[in-house]
Amino acid sequence: MPGTDRPTNPTSARNAWFPRSRRSPQLARRMLRELLDTVPGGQDFLEVGELLTSELVGNAVLHSGMPGRLIRVFFDVDDTRLRIEVHDASEHPPVPRQPAATDGCGRGLLLVEALALKWGHSARTEGPGKVVWCECGPYPIGAAT
Image (cartoon, rainbow, N blue to C red; front, side, top):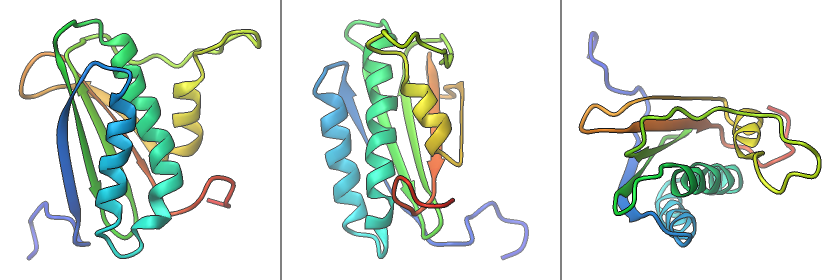
């Protein structure tokens, strides 16, 4: 119907709340795999989707700095893109940086920038904190985009 904000392609979505725990990226990847198993062509998003999920959830666990607060992970997929959202209670925006060659961490957002079609962040509308999101297409790592 003209004038609606509904997507043109049917979508499948899933979301869950996770603790700020080192296990949360693994649990979020499992949720993503379970969702993609229900979507025709969903496996085409798996490789990049798992990596982006690990980076965004891992950043929320490490940097949200809010003990006892939960992290919400939301996935939405159609035949052209996978959207990943990670909600946390921190108001501090994510900032990509150029780590030194000897740094053991600090490359996560560089991977997100390299692999996602687009990414960003915004304030949460339903409480304190922010949403960091990205979208990727249905292709494996190393494929021409």
